Image (cartoon, rainbow, N blue to C red; front, side):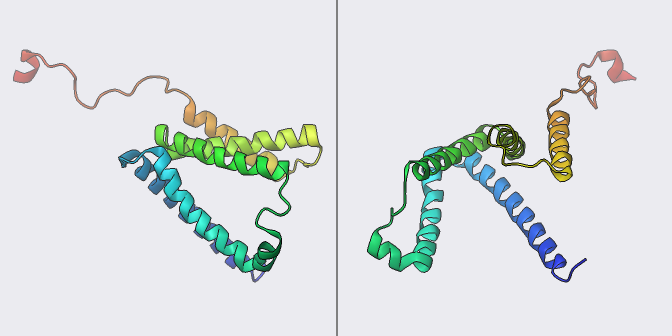
Amino acid sequence: WRSEDPIGLLAVLCACFSSGFAGVYFEKVLKTSRASLWMRNVQLAIFGIILGLSAVFINDGSAVRTKGFFQGYNKYTWTVVFLQAFNGLVIATVVKYADNILKGFATSISIIVSSVISYYFLQDFEVSKQFLAGASAVLLATYLYSKPDKAPPLPLIPMTYSRTSMQN
């Protein structure tokens, strides 16, 4: 136990709570709002653009002014930009028509699939005990969440009434 471990643990806990709150709030906004999914994405993008451009100009303002904003962009950069934009639309659609829990499962499984692809095709991923434990937990949780119940639960009150049962 190092002296900075509690700070790291607190940071992770804060990130978990804020991410969970943001996910639930985002789902509520998407499902109760009259605005279209596209309009909500534009509204969210405005905040991202403002924060992103602020960071760019604070960190690299002089380079942007002399060489332009798109210096160093190539086809791979543009591919990542478009994939991230598409990912945002897919996530919003999943949250609107399913729920935040399913989005979490989908995200976790996509990380596992990406890791497996990276291991077999790119040979740049090493499988660790922690990865196997985490992947197993995700797969088990996904299975348990999605498996159907063996029998439907019995109603708490009878669904049909007869005159004789009401008189007793």
